[in-house]
Image 1: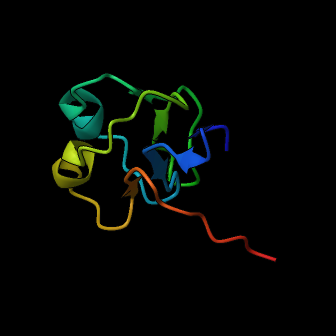
Image 2: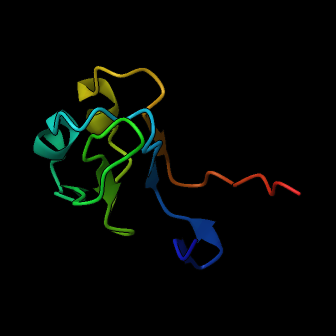
Length: 85
């Protein structure tokens, strides 16, 4: 992911599109408006939320607004991703 500046990982959001029910609560709650409703459908026929790819502050408001456990994960600044082999 291209969220690196000066070697430090910037905050970002991961959305599990198959867990998302497309309610849009996270999109409305995001204070910096980096989330959006996708036009494509997931396997359940919902339009999942998406992340624009930059601009996340790591505040976590989207996580708390989401009624679906496990649909949104917020990574704060300095988070190091594990490489999956």
